[in-house]
Image (cartoon, rainbow, N blue to C red; front, side):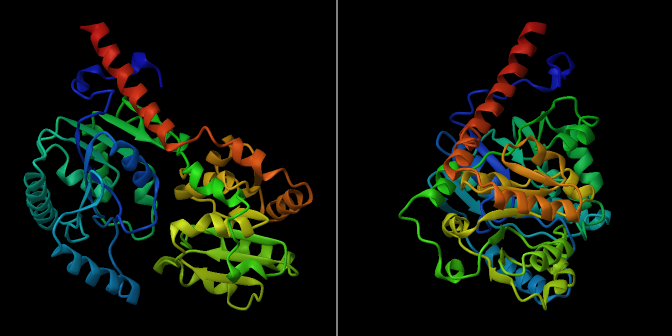
Length: 404
């Protein structure tokens, strides 16, 4: 986007230095797998204090045992005090009703959440914070926390998720318009969202390169769980959600019937029915969710890694973090045809199920040195992404000054 298009009247106080600030961050649960938000806040916490606010639900829960369990966990965690989980990162467990279509419920959520967050801010002596929102439901509180600045960091087409709460679209659109700055993580999101706010920019995801690079280290041991499986090992790690093409995984496993397909991750409620297509496929191995610290060791055991996303509104706007993690681990990657993987070297794209399998064959037949694959993604660090954010903020301020 051109600097000439920037709405300078909105940008007044945001510092391009991002130092010495109190930052309120609405995101996913801190105890979940580290996502882009986690990595970005860890970089910012070196020079700023972060109040991390655990997930405010974007979808209505179902009657499944997983959702019921999550509700009980939320109720229990609500009673816990704000705690410092890492230096300068403090976590609040909020409580809200995951329904936004009804005005009465929406107003209750807004007031109830506002009291919770302000109480935590008083405890931490947060004043004039930067409000950095990763969760669209937090748009309910935007501009009501005494914040000097509001950034909406949009990394998904949230209203395209299965079961998205009624009323979420309206809340998010208002948030786009109210924000001083909007950051998106994919070109498709940039195309879709800049109509709401001219101060919209793209910063693609980074990667925890040093962590995943350990997959190449001699001392890293492949977990026994997969070490003895028939080769090749075709691997995946991440949420096994309904945006994964399980039929494609089945075809892949059947084609490589003398090898193994390893799926690492939690199965979501929305995917439980779709994943049954793999029930009788003998060479598909489910490991369950693994600690983030163990993922490089599992990656070391893979011969090729997959990003088998179904093609739909949600995934076309996605920028799958796992692809960069695979590459940092030195793995060749094969993905379905979503726009954001096409910008990455060493990621082969399958334009159909048949072509996807052909690309796996090609990756296995012509393996590139793992160190070379990893080195090619080294520059995509999370520190580099914060530097991009600082640069955007600096350009906004400089442009504003030039027009005064």
